[in-house]
Image (cartoon, helix red, strand yellow):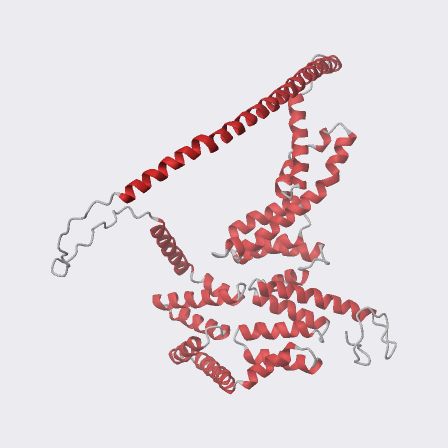
Length: 486
């Protein structure tokens, strides 16, 4: 940690700077927030959410500009997206802040040591700027030609790919729209949440639907079992090249036959006088042991059965007495015992599922329990002991799966499934009404599917009621994006 007053390096755990005695409490808090956003950016980068990672890392550096790990990662993400100049800028700044044990030093050396690579980077930037100039002046064909060369040389250059896809879409030709869709799919493989790419690809719904239909057709074709009979034709030798060996009658061999017969007889004698008596003895001992064990087990089972019968008779008698008492107390209308029994079974099963880690199933069972009907303080206390944890963990589980469907990762790697995401996130809010992460991503789903009214409702809830929420600034940004003043 760097002291803000004297710029000397100090320990994070120091309350004051050992060089100038400056209070470091605020700096420590800023460093902690910077590390939180760095970890968030690292998680997003691993999930290929590069745009989101850049946003988190920039926030990290706003809190603490000397966070070289965050700056180095930001440079790597820029380099991955083809923005080599921005990457070098971040790495050079990082090396100025920290020279020893800084990976940025190695990154800069590797880039600068390759003159060919530097020349290629310079040419790519010039080509992109030239293409952008052509597009701005209306020379779209020249811009497409330049960008096609640039995209083929460096397919990871996202800005060039976005501009090329936009020009293809603007052209309106069918083959151009197909090419734009392929380019945008490639960009989303690099950066899964690139806002521009998602916006452009939304304009290509017809191409996307056809591509998915072709993909399903190919999958069905490969899954079909080949019912055609296999070719079982045998290879016939060519008579013109077959070697004909003259026939020679074989002479009978008597000695090998006698040797085989002798070996068989010897084996039979060994089995009869050595092996078989040992087998018979083992079987006899095993049978005696099994009989003794069976007798003991049967006696134990009979004893336990008699005990259970007696206990069952006592319980049945007690149940009859209790039912009679209830009937007397309620004027001959006994309580719905089956309903109570089912409710308590749900409560016990919910606890078992919670202990096993099945938080969703546990929460669903708890939803079926009416706590007002629990006439025992012990039962109510048992219900309250894990209800909050079960609901929170179930909400978190639904949120994680919902964000996976929203981002199109893990089990939803085939593509963004906003309908499934909305269903899962609504379930998350059902178990925890204050789950702001679920609110935010639910708002994003509605925004991306065109229901801005619903999206505004969720974003406003976060901004107005949860100012300390993790995604507060993101929700406010989305509202401004839709034209609302915050």
